Length: 111
Image 1 (cartoon, rainbow, N blue to C red):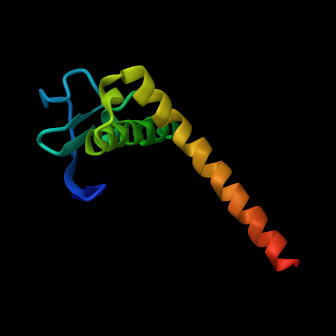
Image 2 (cartoon, rainbow, N blue to C red; image 1 turned 120 degrees about the vertical axis):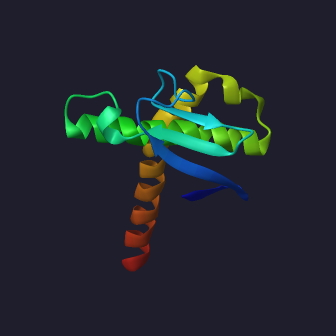
């Protein structure tokens, strides 16, 4: 699947436990190959399906943050703790923005 990251096409693929590019990781972003690779869900850490889905979503966000850093020229893209933190807070940022939009729509509907 093609994934557009700020105007650059990245190949998005799923793989199993045998891919050397992934090594012991659940995902990777091959910056110069323009490829984001994530392990298939059944190989991700987590006992329950819910845990595997949560891990999957986090890994996808994490690798997309690497790609975004590369495409914008930001130098922190190799700072794993920072990339992981950004990937972790994205859903909270999205929820806050959605809450603001919803509140404003409700206020406008009653105005």
